[in-house]
Amino acid sequence: GLVALVLPSSEGLPDASKLAVIGDQLRLGFLGIWEHGDAVLLVVATGICSQFTGIFGGLILLEPQENAYTVPVNRASSILAGVASSYLAAALFGVRAPSTYEIIGALIVIAAIVVLSYPTLSAALARRRASVTAR
Image (tube, helix red, strand yellow):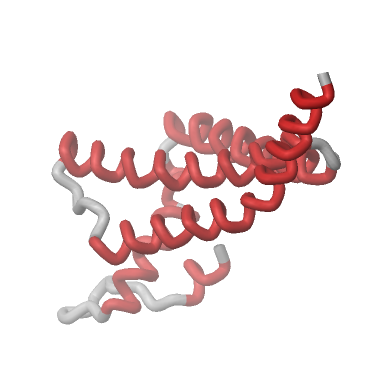
């Protein structure tokens, strides 16, 4: 939030630099939202839900049970939801769709989550196979 206050503003500049435009966007996102009373409640509720997701995800990771793989799955689904909603916003509102670089970045993050969750998933499958063969 402090970056939004420090970056220059494009106000009064005939040829606004990229840094000034970024400053304007950050300032609008962090400070301008409070000027729209109808959106504040929605933004605060979204933030609270987001924090609970992080807290409960951390609690699940602290438990040494086989359901720890659900946290990486949740994170990957969150990235996919962001990409899908970006395409939906582009189709409905004419905003810019995600670039190829953004899609590649999302795929890299999802691949990393899959690789990092592999040990947990393979251990859970091995325990399940052992319990089935023991019966």
